Structure formats: structure tokens, C-alpha cells
Image 1: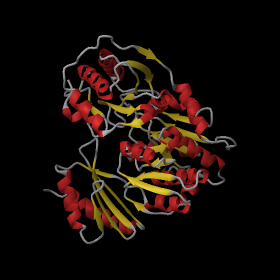
Image 2: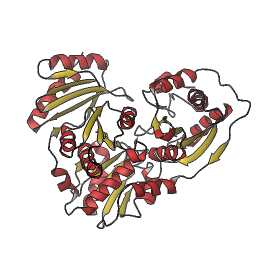
Image 3: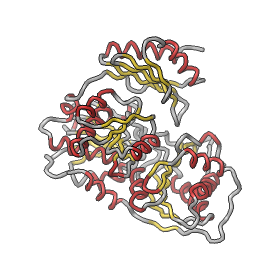
Image 4: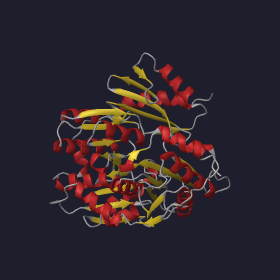
Length: 449
């Protein structure tokens, strides 16, 4: 069984436990067969991984069964973070499948796909998987094989090779894995380099301490408190599948992901002057100013890892960043990896005389609303009402949802790709202007209708 609502723009996410599950083991088998057919993998290998979510092992093995029945060979890498799966796809040069629902609540599971070398799935391939998953499950004359492979040691070595980590001053770092996959990767990647104060490193797909969603401020407070309690230099908070990382400075304050993007972009442009940097449509204007000052070329795309990955490849970009703390690296097959971003920040702080808070304060400053999510009945109609209210105040475009640009400010209203939400982001040069624009847009979004 697999219901249509589990199919999202770039991946699959749906309830697997509770009173109304949206897909099950039979659905996973059908998806395995659909994947092999869509990717034309009969007689070829692909790599399969999973995070620590409930039923992850059972679902992934059912998927492997459906894939093998069509003649595909499965390389099972077992428990891995999503960026470990990207690494495996990249180093092996084969397509990949990761069972994860990222930051969704515990009752969910899902699947992310990639082409060989961690390249993003195309809309046509995603549509083919959707269509083929509803067809009867066939069998091949010669079922495929399954072999297991441990990729963690190679993953850790590869990340260590991508950042100059020599000569760093001693650092103490709080790591909040949220009982997600960073608990699996931290001992191999971070522990050899710094003193780690671990929070919730045990893998537990029920998320007993807090949801593994660092976009919600409430899920950052434990790490913020631990940074202060342990006089740590930094805090790293990962989401469930550990492809995203939020940074906490030594004062216990959350570092805006646009600040992280600007700092890493500046460092990468010092290494490769004139290179392209990719960001999404709601990244702070401060990043554009930093990239221009450093002699780089800024490329702006739609929100979402599939879009950003495609732009990374198209422009041979050295680095990319999103407001959601997804960070992309050309040396990591253009894919997103929270752990590599963490290593870059370690390198910057470890060589600087100033702490993290002062590194961020050196950048151009804008006031930001952060992302404000609202459930609405008709997202498109609501966004059109916001556009009508802002008519004449700034330039309006619909490239990635609604965006209104004024002198030193912008307002963005977008539908979520994965949840029934309308997302509002506002930025301005000063807090008063930002608050006025935010409140005006929010009143329209949340009015009774």
C-alpha cells in the first residue's frame, strides 16, 4: 500500500506508524521495483542506506527485495547519515537510495534518491517512480544480489581531506544529534579533532528528547544551554538524517545560516577567486555583498536541495548554502553535508583570534524574521492576496513562490514542498522596517476567510 500524498516534489515522505499509515512494506517493494525500472538498473548496482527511524530497516529491506526481483544488485550500507549515502554514491559512482524522513516527526519515514555521483534526481525520474509504483510488481529471470558495505571510515577520511584542519587551537564543541544520525558520524569525524560534549548521541527514531528539527528554535535550547554550561567554543545541532547543521556561537546564540554561508563562501573564494557561489531565493542580501566583495559570482536559485544541486553542477560552483542550513560543496559531488560545513566552521574558528560571535559580526547586517510557517487552506490564493497588498511597494516576481523586493528589503511567501504550510520570510536593513513588513504580510496570511 502506498498513498499518493507520500509523493513530494523531490522525495517520498509519509506516515508509517499510527492509526492511518500512508505506506507500508508492500509499498516499499513496489517503490523498489519502480525505482529500478525508472533508473534502468536491471543488471546494475545501486547503493541503499537508512537512518535510525522506526521501521527503517524493514522498509529498506522490502525496497531491496522489490529492486532485486527486477534484477538490480543492492549495495547495502546500513545505518548512514544522508550525506554518508551521498558519499557512497559519489565514491562508487552508482545511484543511491536513502530511507529517511529528515526532520519530520517520529511516525514518518521516507526516501531520498540520487543519480550516480550523488547527482540530484530529475522531475521526470520522480514522475516515473510515482507512475510505476502503481503497476503490478513483476519479476526478473535472474534476481539481483545484495552485499553489505561499511562506508563510515571512508566517509570520515574523505571529509578530513577536504578541509585544512592543521594548526587549530584546542576547541570544545557541543554536538546535539537529537538522537539522529549525527550520533553515528560524530565519533568518527569530530571526536578525533576537538573535545566533544555530546547531547542525545544515542540513535533513537522515537526522538525521546526533542524532535530532530533544528529549524524550530525550541529544539536548539538544549545545545544553547550546554554551550554556556560547558564554556564551549561552538555548538552544532543536526537534524535527524544529519545533512543539515545549525551553529551555536560561544555566547549561546544561534548563528544565522546566511552568516554561515557568507563565512564559508568567503573562505572558499579566497582559495578559488572568481568561483561561483550558489544560494536560494531567500538567502540574506548580506551573502551577495560578501561574495561580490570577495570577487565571486553569485547564482540564485529556487529553495530546495534538488534545485541547488543542479545549479552547483551547472555552474561548477565551489560552494552553496541555504537558509535551512543545507550546505553544498563541489568537492563533495555538489551535494549537501552538514558535517563538512561543521568542519569548515571549526577551521575558521580554530585559526581565528576572535570567537565565533565576532566572526559573524564582521559581516553586513540585516534584520530577519526567520521562517514563519502557517497552515492555510489555499496557499496560492493566500499568496496572491499578499501580492495585491504589496502592489506598488516593490518589484514582484513569482519565480519561487511570491517575492516582493523593495529598497533594502524583501518579503517572500512560498508553499512548502513537503508539508501543508505557507512559509513567510522577511528581511530589511533595520528591525523596525522588518517588523512592519512581517506583521503586514502575516496579518493577510492568517486572516479568517
